[in-house]
Length: 291
Image (cartoon, rainbow, N blue to C red):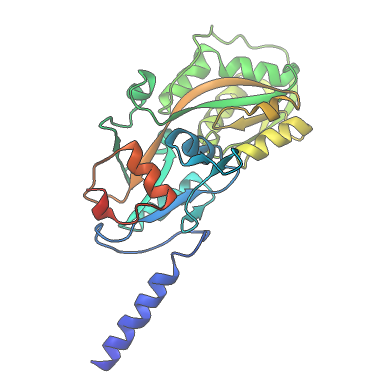
């Protein structure tokens, strides 16, 4: 009996250590969805995080009147969409946010203010947690970069975007192969990455251009596009004025929802915008306050 009590105590200490202040990684709690909320957030520099905190009000003005990301310091930090999904699917008490186009059946998307997270509801504007997928070049795109962008905005490119669960934004004409050759580097957002991979694969079948895809994050995508390290940068948010001042020319290629996800064992099925803000700023810490 003493051994059992000791083992249980050690297990409890290990579980408690998994949720640290700003801890990076994943968690494997097995709560009953009625305990403390495990807040999963993306890393700083993530376009998904930038869009999420702005839309939900987690970004607030500080005492100096400057906008500040007020995400709770107890949040577990994940560095990609897949990391968020893994963390949430492994913790009954977790909540996270991911690209709607990356949603799978290992987690559950909550209704937000009574509206389901679907591509249709993003397109008709009823689902409020949504953002653009942008690409950007340093100055007007030329050569191979311009040709690839024309493919993305073509009928074929926009169909690929729709087929992968995102919302098309252009009613382009059919792509006409050109005699452009060479290679380009496209890099940035891990949320844009999956659909960009599909676009690259299809484009290379009808073009002589080779595309190298580097998945990092939105801020890196914009920085490297401005510096010339990337021919095309990717961002899962609006391109900032400060980035445009460096010469970046943005192009919206799709719209995407941000799904608020919980463990499939969680009995909560919907949440309000106010509750999302309160959870991510740390003023609501238990699932009993959400139900």
